[in-house]
Each structure stands twice: as structure tokens, then as C-alpha cells.
Amino acid sequence: MNKTSLDEVIAKRAEKRFEREWEELLGVISKHPIGSLLRVTVNNATLKLAINYRGGTPTLALLDPYQSKSVTKNTNFAEIKDRLLKEYRDQELNLVLDRLDGLDYLFNQANQ
Image 1 (cartoon, rainbow, N blue to C red):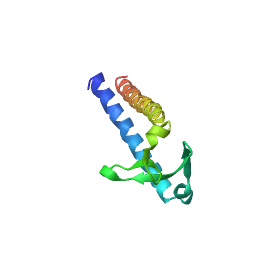
Image 2 (cartoon, helix red, strand yellow; image 1 turned 90 degrees about the horizontal axis):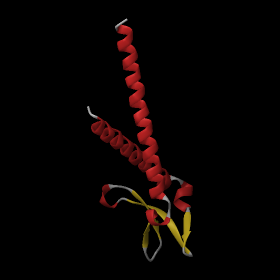
Image 3 (cartoon, one colour; image 1 turned 30 degrees about the horizontal axis):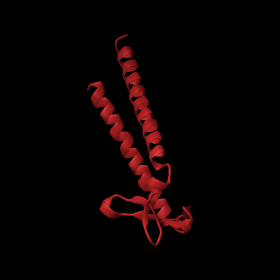
Image 4 (cartoon, rainbow, N blue to C red; image 1 turned 90 degrees about the vertical axis):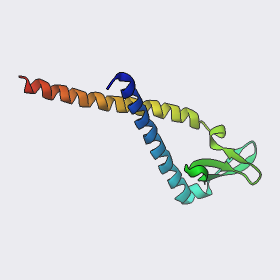
């Protein structure tokens, strides 16, 4: 496996982890009594947090009776996602390196 392939595998694992944790958060918000009552104020409009299941992928939306607004436009979601994906990639890389160190140790013990 070359470095590019390893980078792609690590990036995919990080993305899957983020998606899994995002869906978990959406599930908590939609089922929790506080999440169902929580409102956000944007430009003097009170918006309800809602889970949008259109297209098969759940997303968080800010809803008002007149216009649907995306949470990505009104929050720092993109920044959080980028920061967490980098953190997850680093963790995956460290996990791979730790496993390689373990293999190196085993091979060196076997050769002594």
C-alpha cells in the first residue's frame, strides 16, 4: 500500500466517523425534550431546530414558518467539520503508526 492509498483510507475513515457522530447528535436532538424545544434567533427571527431527512441523509435545519434556513449558513458547522476531520485523520494515522510499531517490535523480537 502506498502513501496516497493510505491517506485516502485514513480520510475515508475520518469522514465516516464524522458522519456517524453527526447522525448520533441529530438523533439526540430530535428525541431529547430540550432539543425539541430549543430555538435559535437569527436576524430577529426565532427558528426551531429540526431534523431534515430529505434525500436519505439526515441534516440539521433551522426552520421558521416562512423560509427554511440551513444550519451551515447560520453556524460555524463547516469550521467544526474541517477541524474534527483533521483531528480524526491525525488519530487514525497515529493508530496506524502504533500498529506498525507493534509489528516492528514483533519482527525484531522474532529475529533476535
